[in-house]
Length: 214
Length: 214
DNA sequence: TTTTCGGAACTGGACGGTACAGTACTATCT
DNA sequence: AGATAGTACTGTACCGTCCAGTTCCGAAAA
Image (cartoon, chains in turn purple, orange, red, blue):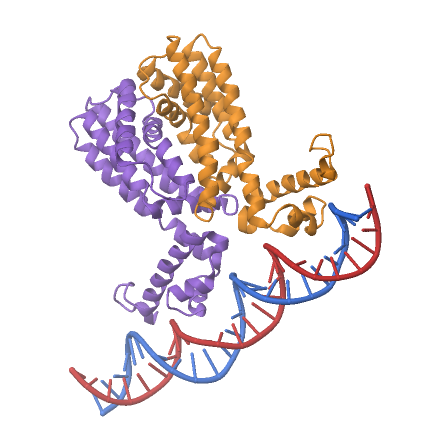
């Protein structure tokens, strides 16, 4: 048997702890410096682990990178699941969509989320499989989920005329986030748009969306 | 006097020609490999120029990079100027906006344009000044210009109720491009969305926009 | 329950091989 | 006579490997 995981959960062994430390440290280093700029020595140092241990857990730099990137899709989906359940409880479309817009803006402009997006985009040429999988199972599936939620709002009479719910979800996200997201993605994360501007963008996005689907 | 530019235009001297060759080669190399992945030796080789000449024209790698990135804003603005003049000649709002949507999708999903976007975004942490300036003088100013064009359409009665023309321009761009742009930015430029899907996205974006502003 | 023990996991550092930014220097070209 | 080519060179950084010594963990033994 494997002496590391004899009986109990796999989260307790020494190896699992080290592995977790390596993943955390590597996340930090990759997000900060990009793939080429990240140094395996720095990862090992930040994880307080010898380089040998790193290479025992991960075959090489690329495998470590892959695991980190694809490990983020689950939590992205979780965030969308949360706003989706809020939306299912709504009784007023305008209010619910405004809350949704605020939640999207707040969640997706956090510095670490932005750095992750930058990293995935930056390596789309070098690692198309990784970036493509991240988009498919993180980004796109989240929007599909949001579309299904909009579809349910239509079923309850809060929206109307949704021929393509997924596209409608993308349209809503585009209305809300195209301006602020581009701004923060290109500007090296100094202060993003002011709070009142975000509020105005959210409000006007809701009005346009409701003019078509309300 | 400067022997390179004695009387005639500055584009004719030997030095200017070499400089142009370096810029072209470096553009290719940077877009292909990113900042860290780009090698100055490769730039010199592709430009058919000695490394010494490269360093005579550009103090170091960062200066060369800066010049290339910021040199692209002008042509981006030119593209938007073109679609803006088309819009000013329009007589039917629905038709004109549909043409605009098609033009945006066609222009901004070209592989080189995508690689440039990826590059600027990727280096937003390392060179926030460069990325910020590119966004401000390329991206944002283009959208402001588009907003002014929409404002003129409103003045001619083809649109109505535009409290913030720049925001309306961002909203239109978001409706049209949020889905396909994210898809191609994250997917490592395999074939993007099918032509008929792009057409559908463009059409539905126009309908939503007109429901609010038509 | 406590002690002991064997082996796997880990450390720390060195090392080979490679790649690259930027400089230096001489011969050549325009 | 200045610009350029060609090329060698310096210094540095990093990936991935290797090895000798040490630490940890789980189970058998007391």
